[in-house]
Amino acid sequence: MASNEKYLEHKFNEFIKSIKGVSVKGPAYMYTGIPDRIAVLPKGGGTIWVEFKGGTYYQLQPMQQWWRDVLLDSDPNRYFLVDNKEDLEALIETCKRLIDTSSNNMV
Image (cartoon, rainbow, N blue to C red; front, side, top):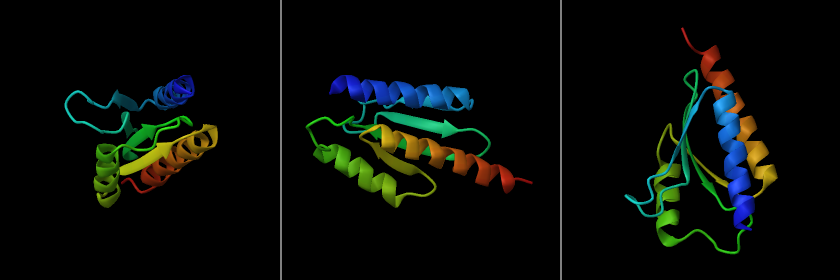
């Protein structure tokens, strides 16, 4: 199952790179439970926070839940939990919309 998580994270990183965004591994050594990836979308698309589970048997740990709640309450930061390919596809479509929407509003 962990390989599925790595696969999803790898495919996400490929997408972010293809759109000329930046994807950074969450500094788990500094902040327990921080999401796996912090990505900055290009063209004013904003920042997203992504936790990859990949169908693993374990649920979000207490500190992961805390980070999720903090990030969901913040704005404009966005939190996503990716558990399977469908979640990843939905996240990619959301990222595309965020970029399209923000670039249409730019002066």
